[in-house]
Amino acid sequence: MIRKFLDQTYLSETEPSRRNFLKTGIGACTLLALPMAATSVHAAIKKPLEKKLSFLNLHTGERTRATFWANGRYIPEGMRAINQVLRDHRTGDRVSIDPTLFDFLHLLQHKLRTNQEFHVISAYRSPATNAKLAAQSGGVAKNSLHTHGKAIDIRLPGRKLSDLRSAAMSLQIGGVGYYPSSNFVHLDTGNYRFWGG
Image (cartoon, rainbow, N blue to C red; front, side, top):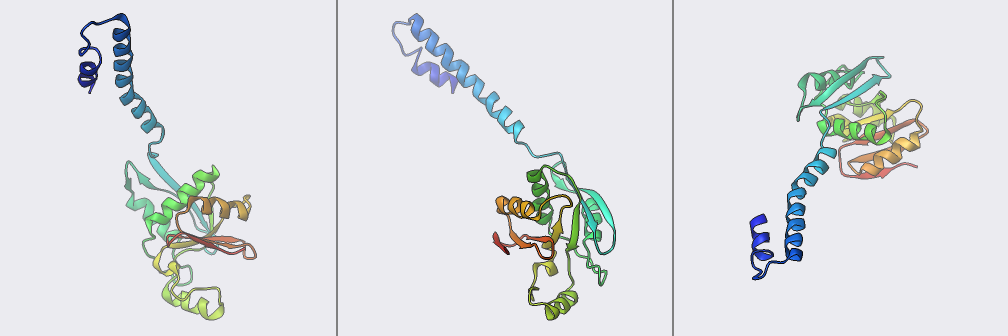
């Protein structure tokens, strides 16, 4: 690329002048600096080396702080620790939670500039638990994403619920439900949408 630039500017001139020499030198320096500028921009936006999440299950009292992603890959041990805390507390059933939900929560923490633990109202729900809850309340979807390990209901102590909702909506990742009367925000990895008032 530099050679082509030189051929078109400096070397194609029949009478080299000081002005052409300076233009060529400045152009060459600019071309040489571009890869360094691109590298520094890439370094500034590179992904974190580790992603951690903390949870307190309000029904069981269990806590975990686990690294679920490091060095470019998900960490099975960390994901298992989180899955244990996010299990159906009524039946003890556990599934592998959708890793996209962990990424959503991590981005939400980053957006809110906190590493505070999430208080979990509900995460995975077995089909039996979900059917029981749906029979008791019209607000529970019969085919809830909770039953697929793709949803969580949370709050962050000391943070306004409306701020949590706004931050989650700004990410435009999945579903965001706002339930101020029950003091939680629902997040899921379905299509981007929001509800509640």
